[in-house]
Length: 312
Image 1: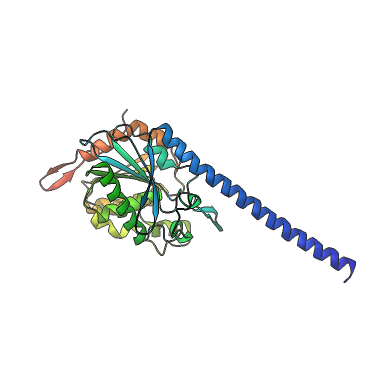
Image 2: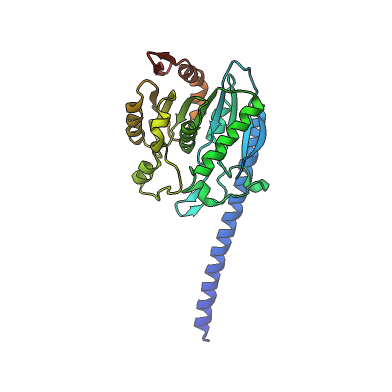
């Protein structure tokens, strides 16, 4: 072996080592950031005096937070988290889908009027505390809305209702959590109302729009519109949303409203994007939003709700 060949081999080995070190460093950083996300969520809930808990379902352990219970005359509002930290980048699936910025937890903690609970998605907040049985990357990629996922989350809602003693349920879901609550509403008969925040209504249209891999192992809310349309619902669209663009949501809402124009409402919020600033908006408007849905009245066999509008 010549000196030049040896130098070339050493250079190649050095590059491999540097690449491995970079990957190790990135993995360590990801692990630290994920641990911080667990602690951050617990601290957020603690400040608001919400109680952390785990809910055991047939396939998963789900993280939940229960808010102070405020009386049987008020419904329980269950807030469902979005897809979380599913991807590190377009080529690297996250090893843990726990959200770095749990925007639906931030939204939920603004609710100081209704009975309230927050429900994380499968594998969020559980992997690093050894409660991630059955967690595999498909559950936060192409199988994120799988039948098993929806069934187990529905079972978790049953347990929340048993613990709290409530029966009238309002579901609020953001981003991918919007798809989850639409699917939950399609299979349950105790959902009084549904609210989505920048919610995903048709994942096939969404993946086609962005030219990304389809969610082949997932149920699609669009296939269940006939079962969902009669439930009073409001879909809040973010005017600056580049993840689920307004024009995409509008097309789906036309389909929903054609099935039941009296029960399906939408409202576009200017100056807000997919993840920013929802908690502040919710603080200002959540009681008007939920009350308008719950005050739906039956007239001539039809359910009618007053269209929601921001206060001037």
